[in-house]
Image (cartoon, rainbow, N blue to C red; front, side, top):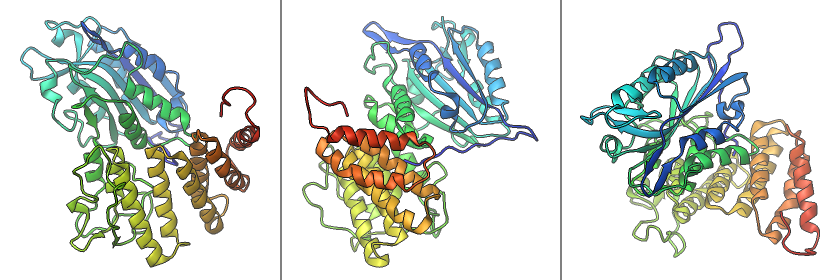
Length: 446
């Protein structure tokens, strides 16, 4: 938790105004059913407040486009959005297609046929070109697309969307499924639904990269789906250059991979792999890849990028083993009460959350919050973030006994902080009180 958004933009002396543009392009269907219903996606996403989508509390406009047949209409709306001085959020859902020669990508609009692609669809290069022309303010682009048989050869097997790499100030996230992807029944697609769920669940707004990672990992995507950015790209993006010591990020790095200044801990011993250290999904994998381990069995440098990649790939046993090994080495070198050890605990908390072990995540976040409270005081952002992470994870603990065990310490931490929203403390108090009431009839909704 605790991944906040960044406001930006050139207001030129006046308050920046954000802009949200949601585009429902042509639906993707085949005889077996609906592959993607863009209208349902946009309708659901439009229910999320604009400031949450933008990760920034500024005045904002929201425009939803559905059923548009003229690409010039979309282009005009896109230009207005790109011209916004404040943060920008663009969402595109629908069918990707290509011209007859299969050389250019298009976002199919309502009524597009194979013969009318060049006249009734939005050229992909228009979208990318407008984003490149943006002069100020952060921009986030999220796509949930299905590529038809004409477009799939242009994107299938690649690791990025054409033209989107290296666009300054623009973050691009999303998925593109192939023409043979399973049908989804016409409702909100899995990836978009998970984006919405992650934004609604968290007491502290996660970063876009964390939302994307969780959404892609929970959406049940078909094999071969293009995921942007992929786990491999995130790992490479966050790897330090030779001879460069990367600054200290939060539990897992965001898009810029830097949120502080202290260097990470050095090499620590790796334990022998036990039977639980390798997941069933990858029985041939080693505890650590060669790129992350030295000949002497040490974790060299800062393994956060590797931990993140393992967690995203669902290899939670390996991620936990590597994190525990790193933590043991840090404790031996700096002590269990050191700031470095607390950072390791926060990383393990986030790994536990990603693995679905919310009880462990709660305990680790509470421990981190209490330690930081002693050093930094109740007003420190890191303390509040740890408390928010602990509260969220505790609300996800379904086992009554484990929730009861963790509740009192969580309440102790919350009561020591000047919470931004007192409702969080009341929520925790009411839940703990309900947990202490014996079952009377049926299951108790916790």
